[in-house]
Amino acid sequence: MDTLESLRTKLESAADINAVVKTMKAVAASNINQYELAVASLGDYNRNVSLGLAAYFKSEKINATNKITEPKSKNVNVSGAIVFGSDQGLVGRFNDSLTDFVFKSLQAIPGRKEVWSVGERVQLLLSDVGLNTTKLFAVPNAVNAITSLVGGILVKAQASMEKKGITTLYIFHNQPKEGAGYISVMQQLLPLDEKWQHQFSDIKWATNKSPQIAGMAEPTLFALIREYLFVSLFKACAESLASENSSRLSAMQRAEKNIEELLADLNNTFNRLRQSSIDEELFDVVSGFEALKGGTKQ
Image: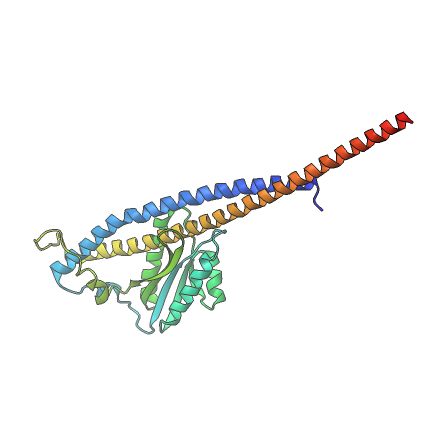
């Protein structure tokens, strides 16, 4: 049975945990904001890159993407997958649900697969379902660190296309949903084929005049495609980090609610036990007084 001292210790511990949860909740909310701002800031830049690609294809009217994305090795058909996970705790089924989605999606894709993991925890889960990762990248801990990660992925991707014959590259990550929560999504990053090129045909130019390319056409296309790949990977990573912190915020909100309920129960128990102790002491005092009073009369 709990004593007043043990209940007081439990109350102090629960209060300390509640303070930690509130701090982590505030940090998660702050991180969500910075990653959502990063995604929003990419919108205008991505629009400009898309306009540049649309202008190029309308001006040149040629398909010049094959010589950029065609791998040198054609011995095997290999599909690459980049999985953005989390290395932080208190995120619920963030990595588990993403792993299930990756496994089911890759099962439907024929040929050999090469999986790259961003985060050690999701790498272990991918290994558990039979998807061994060949490259591991560290999860960025701030918006400023995403750029170096994306640069490293692009360098590795180019090398793998040339040496290992990777013809198709997919991105898997969790994307925030409106309101709360997240959803696992897949995006085909490569190849930049006719289907990819066709999506820019629906973009309307701002004026009635036909766009023209200033300078040499091929270097311009290379520069635009590099920016397109960079924006796609940066956005995927930022959305993954925003989803991670959203999941952590939800977990902290649930934990805060549970701790507050526990504190209320402990306070009620403590007050009830303390009142019972006071009643016993008063009864002893009254009994002692009555006994003393009776002895005096005798």
